[in-house]
Amino acid sequence: MDALQFTRDHQAYFEDYVTRSTYHSNAIEGSTLSFAETYAILWNDNTMKVTATARELYEAINHKYALATASENMDDPLSERLVKAIARDSTAT
Image (cartoon, rainbow, N blue to C red; front, side):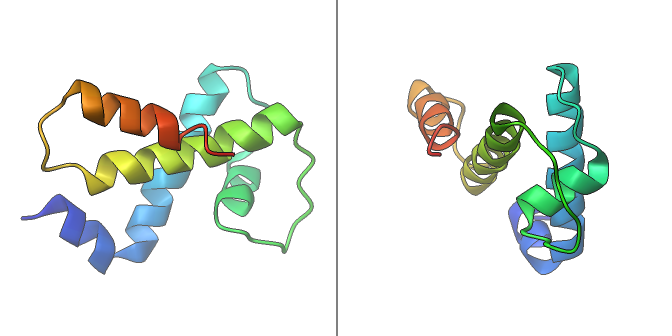
């Protein structure tokens, strides 16, 4: 099964994957965002008030962009070009 096509066909699964990955990755780095706050930031959910530092906000958003770039290039072999693209896209904000 094509993993990229699966995530395109199952948006809820993809959002959960990105949110969990971002939440846990940033928690390792010391982020104090809750899972719900991470979700709200990543998917523009304005139903709750998020009190994040600028660093926490941008780390979450940049991680989402990095995952998107990595996902779009899943079929490509790991290369210097791909690593640079992920790094470039994860610092877009």
